[in-house]
Image (cartoon, rainbow, N blue to C red; front, side):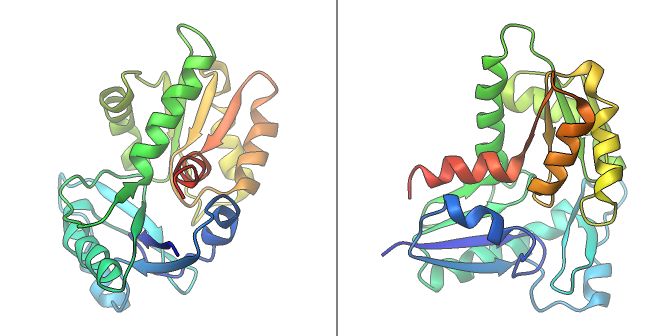
Length: 228
C-alpha cells in the first residue's frame, strides 16, 4: 500500500487541484497537507513578502488566496513535510512552482517545480533547435525573475513572460495573457499549480494551432505517476 502526501504551500485540501491530478496518481492512499493550515487571516497577512523577498501565492481553504514571502513560507512548509512523514507518507509531492531545496525529509520528496521543469525541457526539445518558451506566472512581480529562473533551471531562457493569476482572474483574462506570448513562443507554460485544464484549454484556443500550452500541474503529476 502506497501513501502519497500532497503538500501545498497554501491550505489543504486543494479542491481545485487534487481531483484533476488523481487519475494519473495511482496511490492507494492520498493525504493532503498545507503549510498555512491552522493559520488565521491575520497570521497569514503577517507573512507578506519583505522588500526584496520573492513572492508566492496559493489558495486558501475558503477558496480565497494569499500572497506571502518565500523565506517566511519555508519553515511552515518544513512543518507540513514533517507532519506528512510522521503520519506515514511513503512519498510526498510539494505542489508549488517555487524552489525549496533546503527541506529536510526522510522519505522521497518530489517537487512540482523540478518535475515540471525537466518535463518542459524534454517537451521543448521535441519542437527542434531554437524552440521558444513562453511563461505565464501568477503574479506580476514574478514575471521579471522568470527569465533567469527558467534559464538556470533548464538551460533555456524564455523568449517572453507575463502574469495572470489563476486565483483572482477570470479564465478569459488568463487566455488573453497567454495570447500575448503567442508570436514569441512555440510552447507556453502556465507556471502555477492553480492553473487548471479549463484554463489551459482556453489559452490553447486563444494562442492558435501553432503554439502548445501546458500546465505545470499536469506535467509534474504525469511524471510522478510513472513511479507509483
